[in-house]
Structure formats: structure tokens, C-alpha cells
Image 1 (cartoon, rainbow, N blue to C red):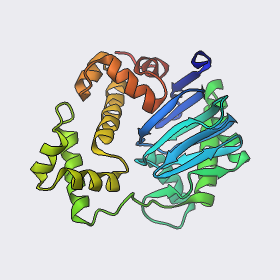
Image 2: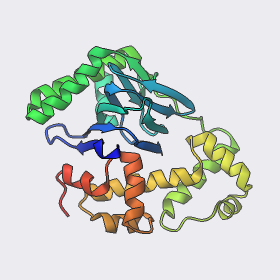
Image 3: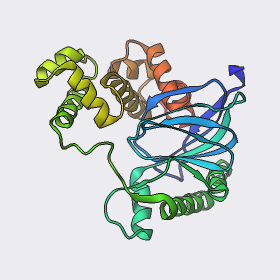
Length: 276
């Protein structure tokens, strides 16, 4: 059954700062992960279930799944036949620039709902894909801006962080995150990390999860994948990228990369036209 799955993760050169994914998944399971970009996923067939922060939600045909940058989420089939979708990953700066033109707010914006029932908006997302596939730059750019404006007007507002970093626990979590990013290739154990910060392992684990929506080890895997993507975009071969971010080997990178991005790192590079 898994052989029937297909996915293409790519870029259209005339839409800078935007990634595109067209996929059909049946047994695919996305691990808890984040994106640096926004996510607009238009479901065309089947149902996708996904955890958005701490809530399990579902999206079906004619609906859009909307995910804000740096927001933990998962993904898996909600029906036996799986789901098909076309997804746009627009850079946060692009969305912010559109918001500045249409919303009477100042500051970072975000979407207030993870699932929106809007068949017309879903068709606009499909239209962006089709225009990009046909090489119609004017249509692709126009439709992207139209769907972004529509979503921001109906479901946008000032972005809300997972947890305001005010408590001592949140400050410890922020320091732990910085240390993990700095020592990504040789991270300390939770016990050593907590001792270095002057707190207990359980207190740090709880504070980290409350602040960032996932425990430290899950956050570290997600951070490694995100850094690996930047290396792959720069032309680094997958085997070298794996070692550079702290994975033991390329198969280790392949497994985690596919569970977060949706395609293996080699396919990711090929479809985006990256050359080593």
C-alpha cells in the first residue's frame, strides 16, 4: 500500500521564498516538527489528522490546514485511503508584507485557526500549484497573494507565542535551547544540561515542553532537520549534511528528514534543482 504514495517537494524560481508540496500519503506519519515558514495545505482528497500544539484536528476536501511558523504539529491519515493535498510554504516575511497592506495591525501576524473550511481558498492554493507547473509566473504570484490576503482577513491576527517567556522555568528553557543549538553535534544529557543551568532534570523537561511544545530531544531532532535543509539548499551532499548536524549517518538523516519534510533529502535536493 505504501508504494502508492507519492510526493514532490519543489520550488518555482519565479516564486522566491515559497516551497511547494504535492503529495498523496496513506501510511505516512509526520513526527512532531515545526517550519520556519507558514503552511497552507489544501486537502483535495481524503482526510488528514494532525496534532496542532495540543489539539487533534482533521482537514478534508475543500478545507485548508494553516500552520504558523515555529508551531509544533504532526500529520497522519484520518481515513484508510489516506489523503492528497497541495501545500504552499510561504516565507514569513512575504506573509508579513501582505499583512502590512491589508490589516490594521502592527507586529508579527499569524492564523488563529488550524483548519479553515473554505473551498474557494483551497482552489486558490491548487491554482498556485498549477500556475507554477505551467510556468505562469504572473498567475502563480497573483493567486498566492490573493489566498494569503483572504486567509489573513478572515483568520489572521497578531501572532501569539506558545508561552510567554516570563517565568524562571521559561528562562531556563530558553537557555537550554540555546545550549542545544550550540552543541547540536554533541548534545549533553538532560541531567548534565539541567545541572549546568542549576535546575533539576524533570523541572527542565517540564519547562521546555511548556515553552516550546515538545521535549528537548524532539526539539533537537527538529532543529537538526531544519539546519540540514539549509545545508542541502546550499548544495551540501546529504551524507555530509547528516554528520554536520549531528546525525550518525545518512540513513539516520533520511529517516528523520522524511518524517518532517515529507520526502527524503536526496529527492528534496533534486526537485529543487540544487547541485552539489
